[in-house]
Length: 499
Image (cartoon, rainbow, N blue to C red; front, top):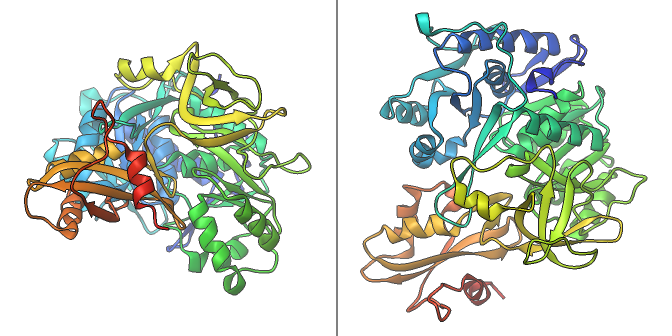
């Protein structure tokens, strides 16, 4: 079995691996490997034992990839976080058992949070020659040598949090074997080669950008173009100047690029294919994209617990079906009935998966594991069906997550914050359809004191990332409930969905 040490093994050392933007900077595979080894030596000498979890709070760019792979090379576990979640970092890091923090030198929020938790912080900088520098202090007798300390396939390589149906996010440990299985699935499924260049638009703290685009491209020996952030204005000029052959994004980004295509885009995009994942892509939009960009648009299906990809529509000449997320490939996909038994084609049930890419279980959470696994299958919480050819179609989500542009938001987490306000008696958050994001966050509030919707939104921003703050707050006299007292979020969605 392979580990992430094998990721770059077959790449041509002279080829360009990473291209940074603003500042413009590129690294060949030889330069990338040398930077990884140099930083990994420093990390191994930090005093952290193998398996210790290091938080990475960095923007997109070559530096993120260098640091991520160096952490894994040093037999540590990488735990990427969204810097926009500053208010939540302390809670997440304590839950994850973070042992050190890597952040930009000017990221005061992350560095101050590390100091408050008494965690060693290793600020990142880049010198004039493009070398990534980490301020890692050697711990003398506690240091260990990198040589002879290669990771094992079953070592945890990546640790992520994913919000479930409760307010407490679940920890997802993914091993080297999980990551390599997913990367090989993606690279093989899209027939990636050293001639491919992906233009990165998704954040690297999320499996979509990290595994679905960046690491799968590096495994194939291709090139990752990694701007700091997605910019619709810069996308097409950058795609043309770098010779990008594909990109992967959520439908929100595809929609933005499509709306601007007549003014910004060339008549032929030059892409070999375009990938869509993390939220449903409307068939009409898929057709419009293919017509305008002159490239096959392949919808895929992924989740954190599967190290990203579960299924994807194949490249031509095999059919890619609008409204379907494709075939499982090396991932087994079944539709289960309420008793956990597989259903025949065209019968709706819960989507379940098996495969080398699937996690072994949530971190220190036996209750969640008992609910998630049945007869060796991981239940995804999504409702769907298989057709006669094995293509997966998703009918809807079983879990009460709000899917805002690919970011999964837990209603219970938002409720808990709202209920902490002294003027709130009851609260229930829910999703409503949104043209731009797929779903937008709303909430219904029963007051027991004086507060306005703007007051409550400001209160939420103190504890939640912006994308989790309800866009609309409805002040109501009472919440709809079942006979057992459970809030009916589906009724709220129907009531407050704009006509």
